[in-house]
Amino acid sequence: DGGITQSPKYLFRKEGQNVTLSCEQNLNHDAMYWYRQDPGQGLRLIYYSQIVNDFQKGDIAEGYSVSREKKESFPLTVTSAQKNPTAFYLCASSLPGQAIYEQYFGPGTRLTVT
Amino acid sequence: AQKITQTQPGMFVQEKEAVTLDCTYDTSDQSYGLFWYKQPSSGEMIFLIYQGSYDEQNATEGRYSLNFQKARKSANLVISASQLGDSAMYFCAMREGQRGGNKLTFGTGTQLKVEL
Image 1 (cartoon, one colour):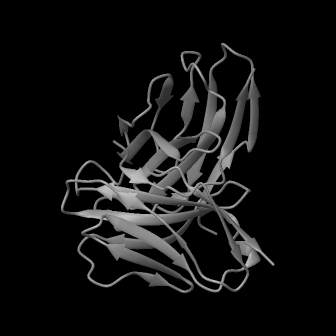
Image 2 (cartoon, helix red, strand yellow):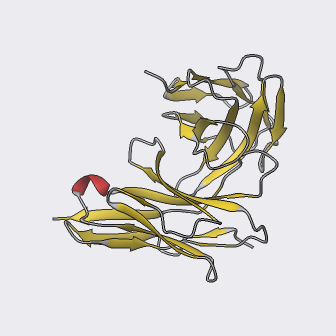
């Protein structure tokens, strides 16, 4: 089945450690996105990539980094510079260009930093 | 200013009744798209319905319809014949313009609870 996988579902880290969240899709989508969701809030865009080897900052990119070396993969690294990293992280993908195409979301990773 | 406003943090509806979830938006673009997503307690986001700014007809998908009032900048979601499985968080989102990627701006959501 085609879809987006995010692993792990729950992740625990100590403060000061970098952590990388995985996102893989087999939908053959060019565009991929990372969102952050805090309790009771909507989703906020961290980074997005429209094509391999290219990505752009979203609204809240500070303290995060990404890479897009393969079409299928868009890992997100939460660095120690991110002041409040505990959140629910969602990865999405879509066809590029004209935005009648909805974004397909993965199941999310819940990150807790203590 | 908020680009997407959902003023109802929580809603209750009786099973089998219809419910309207409100969404207003703010944009100066002529071309934009409006989306509704459902987020069950498990966390995944499920696409429900899409309305383009140039679409003259209101979008419908099964029990979901979008009441699009362009002049009022509103895009309310109507769920007919509510089911217990409709209990979830619902998000309205907007994509502006035709350049800069398919970026979405989300509202803060409405928690819907369907009761027997």
